[in-house]
Image (cartoon, rainbow, N blue to C red; front, side, top):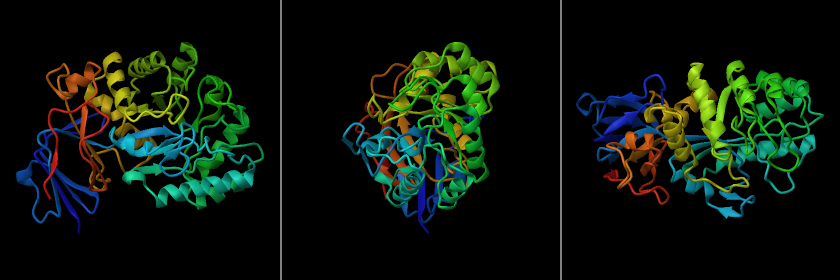
Length: 387
């Protein structure tokens, strides 16, 4: 049995919006799953096969990017860039969810082809995890001509997500709703493109279509890139029980509007984060951290809760076994500390002023994957693997 013991933790962020900070200075994981946490004197820390001295920094569940467009391996033809997933891991992201492999050159749009690519994409990221990052891929873009049996076939093969509704030929709410309902029947989650067109072939998706389609996630509610008018964003927040996905590649003002509206409605637990990369804006290795800092600073959200937008909220909305400090959940963590010379008395206070923290280490499934981040500003303190 592999046993990881993390000692000398400064504070633990839980990922739970209702209770974001946990008391404790130690955490134990067995075979890549969280076993226990709290005061070291109360935990069984004997016979550790690996051990980390956290050096009093903050431990948080690994961040989740709810909206990426992977293609194959750790390469994106959209920006001709290698190792973008590894680079994002250095921004604390340990899990990614595909919103469609739409940048694949020659992406098939016939029914047989799109199903084949979806199943293949699901398989290759299941079999190959770049730098250990969990990429939930194989998200087909729905097209006219699909029937219920197509969704049953893909679900049976392991496909769990639909690509963004609206990026294919299906652009009317009635047809989209029928297909989303078929997908849901077979356990597949759905998301919808929201706002103006982003790539050739996409188009405007307004609030009426979002509501009629009824997806599980309102993809980039702040636009990707072009946002809907304010009244439509407010309408979606008031009307929908879906996740409100805010992305780095969207409209920042609309992002803050979404958070403020969600707060007024008591729906901040529905806010989740993505980057919407790789895209025309490029790859954003620190995109999730940047959104957490921005929404905390301009949305007046306590930083401990803003971090939940990037892990626990997404875990709950997406039904994942990551992103929360829970017994039996994956031992996926990011170690954070205040960046050197940044304002604020603590890491959280610094984030509330809009500053990025420094990432000192990431762990996935109980295994150290990176140490000091090559992308974040240097932290004041860095964890150390001592065994």
